[in-house]
Image 1 (cartoon, helix red, strand yellow):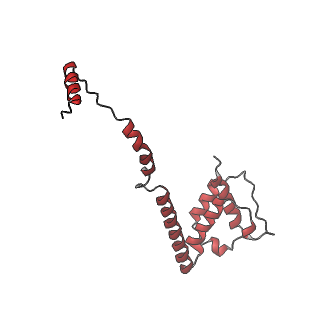
Image 2 (image 1 turned 90 degrees about the horizontal axis):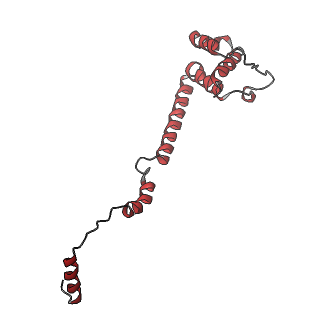
Image 3 (image 1 turned 30 degrees about the horizontal axis):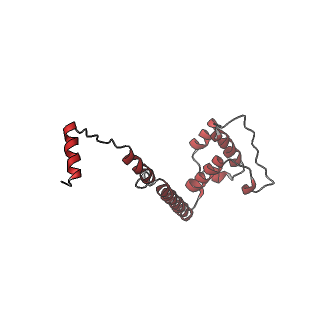
Length: 147
């Protein structure tokens, strides 16, 4: 599996070079140092200044890191509240979908419906051996309709 986070850190550092210094200063220096320490030095990424931010070809990890930086350090309280509400809503929707798909109450329901027939057909059959004289007595009971 390819390590995209080291490449994403490189992309974040390159993008931060184009962000105003006042905004970069809001990010903890330890975080920036971590990005620099863990970024892929051999990965070649350049910001195309002729394209808008949305048109840049960024890794999904880069977008996630920048979204977290925006939420935690650059957003207004109102924006932060809206972002957190949206994230909460998305998590709830995801959990509801998982519950529908993997409902513990219904998870084995279909399997049990299919195996009920198999259970009854796989039950051991009690074989009762009749003795010779019991067979004769039962034969005469059948002939004379005795119960």
